[in-house]
Length: 248
Image (cartoon, rainbow, N blue to C red; front, top):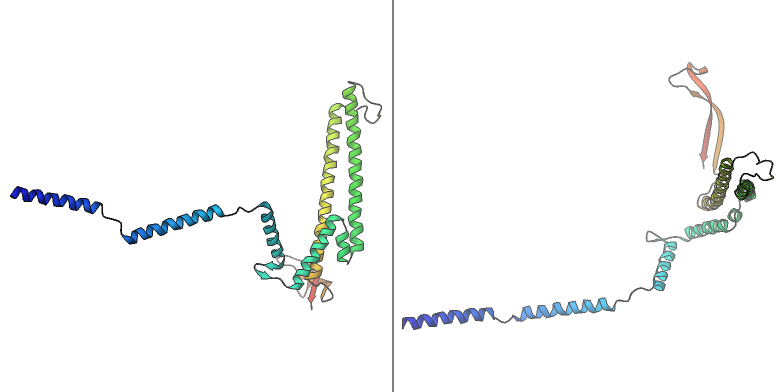
């Protein structure tokens, strides 16, 4: 009888353990799992249905952002006066970029001095470039002739006594000066654009007129730690100039 009771006791423990392992999932955990699965499915559907931005849409978006920047500064809308100043400055430098001197004429003021100076610089650049181009071709043609006719100089009396190494050095020297002058001409064009923009900003944003005056007058300056060329009231002084500015 004791053995039968023991067997039943062990069978009871075995079935209790099996029942514990195969315990059904609770309703709460099952509902949470269903919600999580549905959210993951929605995210996947949303990712699959996101439309990729086309090049045309990207270009339109960038253009809209640039247009907004014209009217807003750090999120603050610009006033009409500032917008007009910026518009005038843009017109000035763009015109000078297209036609040198046009922006200076748009800004008025001393355009009748600036425009001749601008075109005087371009004229000088053209003459310098033309000279160095002629110099370069002169030595290059001589080299070509000597390569085609070894040991025989051309009929150019100025280059008969030149060696080939000297001709090559002078050719490279002329080409370098020509290219440098071209770069300086481009820089002169850029200075013309910068001047038009700067002059427009100074003219429209800051009023420099009769309210500001300057006066240059002679004066005597004390000499510290030395003896001056003259003395005044026992102190060594030196002659100088004094600049006085008044802002009314």
